[in-house]
Amino acid sequence: SAVISQKPSRDICQRGTSLTIQCQVDSQVTMMFWYRQQPGQSLTLIATANQGSEATYESGFVIDKFPISRPNLTFSTLTVSNMSPEDSSIYLCSVVLIQGGEQFFGPGTRLTVL
Amino acid sequence: SQKIEQNSEALNIQEGKTATLTCNYTNYSPAYLQWYRQDPGRGPVFLLLIRENEKEKRKERLKVTFDTTLKQSLFHITASQPADSATYLCALAYDNAGNMLTFGGGTRLMVKP
Image (cartoon, rainbow over all chains, first blue to last red; front, side):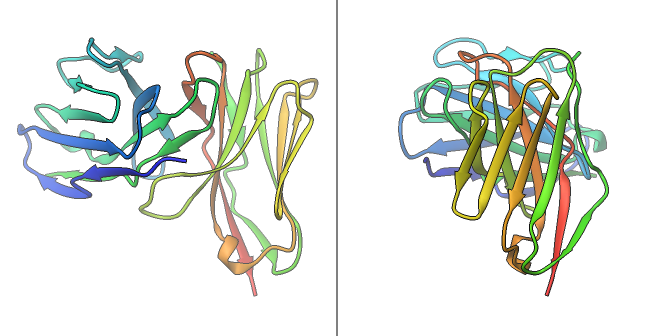
């Protein structure tokens, strides 16, 4: 398995501001993903974080709103830009060590936008 | 589009009994399927992975079955304990290379002493 940490664990932000969430893994991984879990809902994939290139976004998510970086095999950031109360969610990063293998999740970042 | 259904109603069982949770999907079969446990305010914890060519997988008190004809996976917890109370999520991967998961809505399990 992999040990995944996320920073911050939670935050309360004002409308119109941006927040950057960090995801750090204790070993090199093949793939990293970012998910969103809105209150009472299941997980929805935002994007695949690609090392050294632009992330691959799922339908309904765009780079201007959720810019993602992945400078190396163990670290990624997700920024939630120009936030509104609808962005209040838990944001989770996940990793896959080997293609076709198990996917492990970080503890999540709980974001509240006022 | 693919649809994944888990019973949205909570499952209440008595300690010591076997809990059985269901995950149904529509359209084409996934390459593999994963089950997770999620506690309130925490990220999902990986439990088991089963591939399309596997019928059954076991790990301690956990058992997963995968029926591609019925388009269904069953998740069993034997000798259930109050500590097993949580939400259980199934997630399907349709691409062996991509690993992108589509999640069901989850089923909340309550084990009463």
